[in-house]
Length: 111
Length: 128
Image (cartoon, rainbow over all chains, first blue to last red):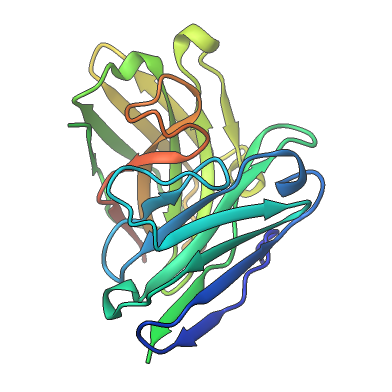
């Protein structure tokens, strides 16, 4: 069971908007940056969002991240079939020794 | 272009040992922090541990399950990261990924506080 809580799945039609939540605590999300990763089946994860809301070069502005308190959210607008993937949030737990954390992952289905 | 290539996966018996490697090119390896992440079949991502650059102390941090059986090391002269796993258990079966860790040290693409560049993964199968 992951320390960071994500919904197991979300779905929406092409062109619509979807949001994926990531809930943590004061020792992880509450005091650290959040990143998001996209993983298409059979491939390695790819960095999608870093520092809560920054996009790497080449990531469309349809993808956006935000953070408030101990939760973070990934929003995807103008859904495309190519967005079908599993999305993971990630951060750090710095309460004792530094360790990385991932959410359980959310599978996005574009209907 | 930064590239990470993992190797060393394969079939290992329970109780055995394995050493995974991650060859890094296209960037000054000695200045980057590196992380190992694993993914069991059909499961999510699981952080294994990370190692800082020598300039930042070269220390390694581990997930709870990895403490004691897993050792992360690096050879900056060979631009290679390693993951040693001893007393392998069935639950260690997974795809193991290495990634550049931009929480500290140099960051290949300046995407700080994210796992910037990932390898393609190497598969570990555990069976007697």
